[in-house]
Length: 208
Image (cartoon, rainbow, N blue to C red; front, side, top):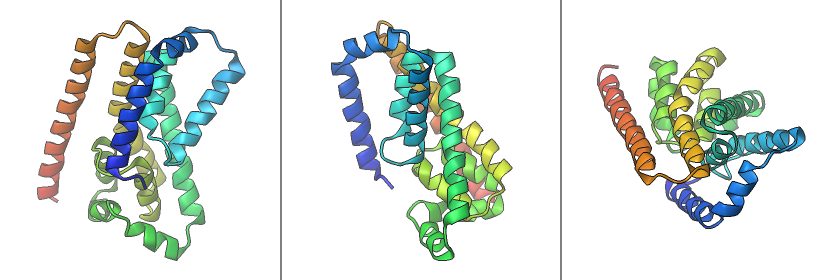
């Protein structure tokens, strides 16, 4: 899995690229695309959501800029959740016992094993909401822990909504005249939300 420093570096590099090539990107995002190009975009985004090569947040920003905040957020949530389900099913169906044991001892996954045994829904939900471990690691973790797929699905949807909404809004803002005040407010609100979630997580940890 990607290290946190590498993920942060990729996000910074992506922000620089988006800033440098903003004009041609805006022309492409503002143009009408035929249906098969849209399908190709969605399939590419789905592949990225499954394979931990590029953080999906970067793709979510582009989709938010291309299709607008509302439609972009819906598309991003659908793609991100579908990618999580595909990886979840793949790991559960193909991992050997040895492979599951190795994955279970991955850094970050061990931390949530105890919580999953007590309450799998909140374990997945907090893992999604808090940027502690990569999304793909959570998918593997849920599969090897034999978490019921409905519990995993509902927790994944709820956990992905806040971050997807933020990056979709930032993407839509990118297409229009950039308002750094709105951007700062959006990021600040999300940061405050994470602070509250972390506080709830700490309280939950002490009482379980």
